[in-house]
Image (cartoon, rainbow, N blue to C red; front, side, top):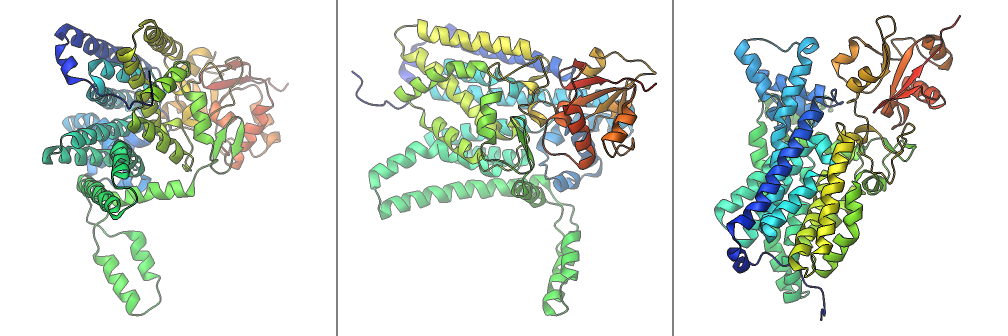
Length: 568
């Protein structure tokens, strides 16, 4: 008879040793097959999508950084350089070998393909870390189920097809968690440095690691911290034990931060804004001292600039859009609701069983991580995509995979976990097939309505500029009737046939009267983000309000197409 909650039981090493090599080989083969299938899906997807909003910027800045041996362009944007450096390195080598410079008009297509293909390294790292985490918890089968749950998440797959930063940083964060748990179980100097280096790589990949990595590290320590509380109670002994633990975390964190400053490097230049501020002070000894310091403090550009830019970005916030409502500022419920819309159907089908297994045998670090990451998401003021909380998405999938493995291990009747496994694999496979090639657009069937322009989500949750190829294939056009495209992106191919970029200022559009006059006889494709999204500049708001009242003649994956009549 069960008398209480039993904590998640790690792999029984004695029983594990008795397993045959063949039984251990099966989950490894399945994990490899899953990684291969998702890689094929991602590769096919990446070749069928135009550039997203961020990718042209990353390509230009990355090649500029390699050519001039500086990270200044990225630091000015607040973009940490690891993913961009890796994705553009093959391109830099190619141009260096051929002694050429990038031709953005003619070479952008193949350069983007190379960068996206190189970005597969980060997807493989994420899956590898999922396998390691599950295997360390409960053996190879747990490793497979954790990997499968993460690999079959369509939003993750969609972003893995892009040359961006979110998959890269998520994999590095998960690696930090894996190494930290190993360090807890078998402390050593080598293992300590593995934790510090993965923590540093997380920061080197994205500034959000300043918050997310400490949350994951704290979550890994949660059972130990609870045991300290039970052992010492509210006493000086508890405070001393917690202080020792905190000093250990600080040593790891500051070591990682120091490594990041070394990796980013510096141009040994003055900071212009610092010099201008010092010169603006009132004459006197303070001004003289600050002016001298500003002139001689030649440590810029450095990693601190990129981290500071991201911190300021989050503090300023960003306009938001959700459920058909434009918000000039961030709203606290954005990410919790977004999870309900964007997470796959199979996750919600399995959710009752996951909760049931976690009640019976909780994996405390995973539950604490999910809870803290969800709580932090309420405070996130930059709400432009589920990608910003990918660590939360991954941890939800990891807990699902761990629950599946525990169910198989502990269940006397196999039909229950067998049905759950079938639901995960079949519904996950169906989602892959249905969503191909555009995982970014995934909305689970509980919310989706493909018969009309969707109004639930926007930006990188649905339309990030990736739908130009599909638009060209589906909409009729000729030399005399190009497709005028209103979209928020930077792909240079939007300026070639069969497209023309619709920029209200360039076309003399200032109000609805001038818009109607200009539209006569034209085919106009309005992207989902322009049609329904966060607040826009005034000239684009004219487009939005006008076309929201019209019925589109045709829908593509990311565009509403309007065919206007000529004025006789």
